[in-house]
Length: 309
Image (cartoon, rainbow, N blue to C red; front, side, top):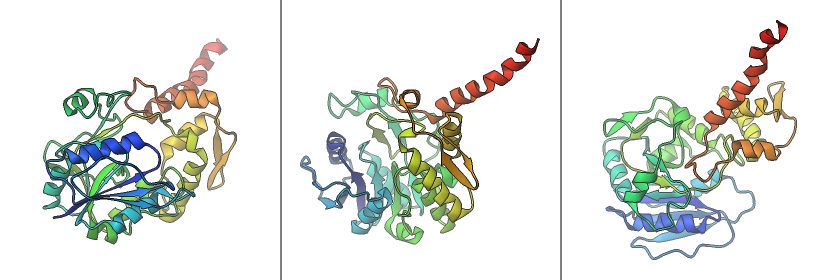
């Protein structure tokens, strides 16, 4: 079985170099790395023991879905491993995926450990990564067995997954009508399910996510989240990203308007401060922010009877 690794890249030069170095440390190297370059310039990358092909797509508003689909079409492997540019693969990641793929079709989702800021300053040190990395509190933990079925397509996340090339084609790939941030992962999970393909949690196949500043809920992508939520609703007849939309509502950014949403105002610095990931945090948490917002929204209601006495 030949294994191709596919990634997207726009900026993040150091992160991409660390991904390449991590793949070079693999106990089972890939047959290739295919990079969909979402900018006009290709990257200068470290030497590797496997071919690296950079497909320069430019940067004129190309959907992320289009980049992933192009990388998959260009790949020559039987098994496609998709890693975000922020990921450093564990030395057994490819070996783990290839082993499970021998007995499973459909989507395979490996583990992810989130690193805090400066974790990679001393280079690639897996023992250090393992000490520092945290599992995302809003993601399921690894299964106790080698693999276990994931029965909710909404859990699919494109950060670190594998799928056979034939199954990717059968799924139809990522829907390129999703523009900007949000929705395309859940849509792909639904498409995979609709195609009759299973989704599996995999123990191992671990990637370490490199720190970068982020916002959750993603207020910096307010417009595209709303548009993509509408796209998903129209396509599947079901809502998605409801926790983000609820948070935006409580923040006073949006309100319901007919079957969709209307923007009331653009995010300000207070909104960014509320949702901004701090350097000591390995990841930003939508759940923590939403919990705070719900508590603040409920506080006046709880206080009302006291005021009436």
